[in-house]
Length: 455
Image 1 (cartoon, rainbow, N blue to C red):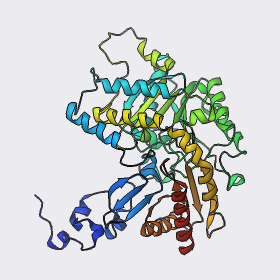
Image 2 (cartoon, one colour):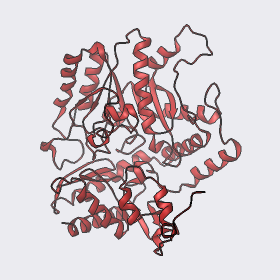
Image 3 (tube, one colour):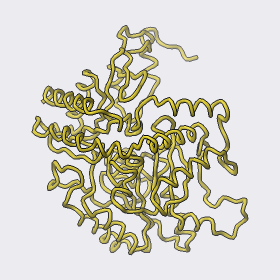
């Protein structure tokens, strides 16, 4: 065992350290985090139930983002915990290559029934990032099988977020997520649909559908014969709840169909109720060729993602002259359709349907919208955007430090007993769908106090 320096091994007496040593904290390299600041002042979560976390120092912490948009049906659901435990006892692991287990088949069929008509074939992954890279590979392979191998180009959108694997980082349009890594996969980007004319819009903005016409410009630049797919989120969540203008997604669908380009909806965040409908495709009445899922698929209780493809795409892979024992799509992961994740997914989908979670989100959305927009006029609030049970508060930046003010507000909220996600220049809100009005009031009051105090 590596020796631990005596001074580094000391345990901080503050209860919030949960008995951990400084050396132990140094061992953990955290994702998407300011590790240096965290190690000076750790924020440790030890349990969760309903709409709340409990911190290491014993405080109840209101969860204003469903974890990371993924525990939307509430924390600590016993049905999911029991399903995972049962699977761990009966089938801890099953190989996904050339074999299957019943849970994988049942969950795939459940997802098929829930997704829009025409999206009928489910390929499991372990995360949203893996779902996106799988979808991009699927799109390119599809065109190769169709005898059009030149169709390889991919198009994303500025401020889009599609995970952190190589393909998703490339089609993603958040500059801070790309600048450290150089060129990964060549991609073009449509403009973001965040427009100054739509500041403080409530729900779907009226103005901006014309931005979809930029796809025509890219077609003129590259020729449609070279473009494999366009990938967009129905609502961009991680970039700060950027809602598509009325008619924008419909126009993208029309242009993709006209030019023989696949349309991929990244519904990792919007899937299973977040915007007050089962999917963004449902809300906007637009069916993509491929849909990516994760997060609420298991209510965040186990890592899992999925890619749902149209019959045309699936059948193109299956209609091959090769031997039946060879993979039609040579792609997958050791933990694809992991039995514990499938058990969690089946239990989560049962909750989603039985408790009508999408309808519950839709019912709470108007009150949530009203209370969040009540923060307009507070110091340095530049914009507020919302759709369903998602909202973002955009803050005016300090010169050269766009993330500082949201970080300061989020830390004040943590001190007062609420977890708030901050990213870039926004505070992001996406509470569990089981939240009550009184908890929405608490959330907005804590935010108002923190914003005012940091002004």
